[in-house]
Image 1 (cartoon, rainbow, N blue to C red):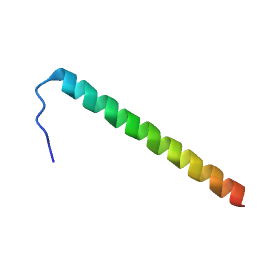
Image 2: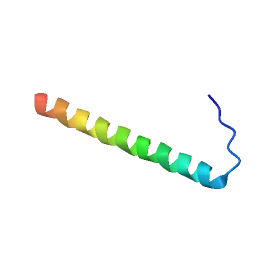
Image 3: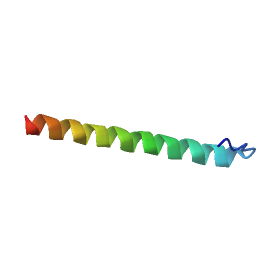
Length: 40
């Protein structure tokens, strides 16, 4: 779904949400890596 956002504040909010999600994904990936290292 593509939203056509004219408002720059909405665009900035969307970008910050995307970067937050990316950061959370990276943290989850790091936690999963720690688990596999500990499991060995």
